[in-house]
Length: 222
Ligand SMILES: N[C@@H](CCC(=O)N[C@@H](CS)C(=O)NCC(=O)O)C(=O)O
Image (tube, rainbow, N blue to C red; front, side, top):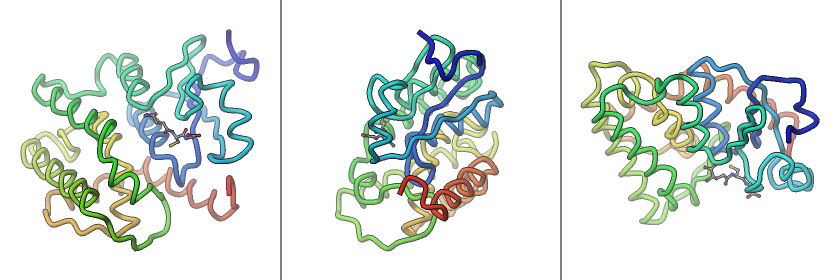
């Protein structure tokens, strides 16, 4: 059944957490923006009584993000990205089969891995901090940089994103670019550094960062 507060709208709805903190929310939000899909946001403040009270009406997993499309609810960032990919006739993955397979592999690797990096350097879209990483997290940082270097070397001729044109893989790694910025990660490879710059300078990501700053300034969700 359609949620009463969303009845009467045929627009896609993305339920997200704080823009300063919610890395999983950022990913499908970027896919929606990059592929020009109209949507409205519902924002819930993470780790609050309000979040726990409200989230179940949207999300069977009690987590965000969740996409609501009429009667259809899709939870989990990667499943949402795949659903959106179908809405744009497959344009959210690279057209070339080998690039597509690798884009899917690195996206799955991000989705299921990098636990050390994600634990010790949680995403903050604003500000900066200095946090020393344990060896497992340092290996994650090195692996991300290695794969950025590898795919930017391979697909440089096709455009500035990881596989040339913008794809779900870029959305999956955007929170890592923000982590590297927040914690001032050293990036040895010039190609990986250029890719991080490309991700951070993305006007859509800049809009997300500006909204995150407004949250922080107004103590929203604090
Ligand atoms: N695997 C999920 C992870 C979702 C997730 O952990 N979301 C966090 C916010 S970034 C959340 O909802 N946390 C609230 C809680 O666990 O109570 C995805 O890819 O969407």
